Image 1 (spheres, rainbow, N blue to C red):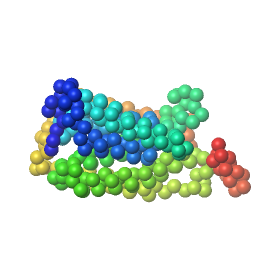
Image 2: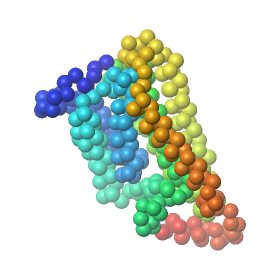
Image 3: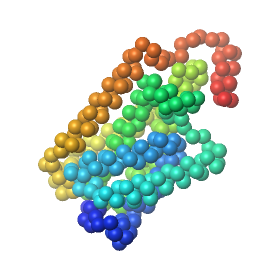
Image 4: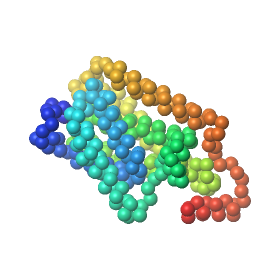
Length: 276
């Protein structure tokens, strides 16, 4: 596979040569993702997370190798940010609803955000990042396992299929955390079918990539992961997992809505919340 870390001198010729099909895929992809996620914080942190993943796995999959200015300028600033902000601009001007994934509505400061006080919101955030890491790695390791170039029709069909399908589990998860612990949840049941299907697809992709990983010639099969990569990831996973457990079992943790009210009163509460 072609790599992008051959000529890393900061010159216009080197930068311009990397504006290829990958740049267009990044730009269009993040534009579509903007309409799925509808939240500036999650979109931009996802954008940065993709670059961190590439840096963490480039010693195993050389295709992740890029020049520093490629990560910063071409990927994050010129493609990801442009696609994200364009999508958000269109949604704001078209009066489309943006998603409050972090529970910031009504909060006076970031300390009052639900994501820092409710295990449901924080657990979603961790599930979200786990989901996108698996999907992102699956794309490149599947191409390696199946001997597919990036522009192969199967790769294009996979990305396009995810673009149409991923809206459903994201919407489902948002409705889950939005209505959780509210009267509306009593009449609007959420089963989670789409998110489980998404998890099953990602799991199958990861298993396929692992099964056929050897002998492809596009990855360093015996590469050892340096400590400066493994240690930060372990610390991050342990710290985030510990904080989730703290939120889950603290004495004033958020609980499910259990109050039993007459149906007429319950419907009036639901209508009031929708109007607000």
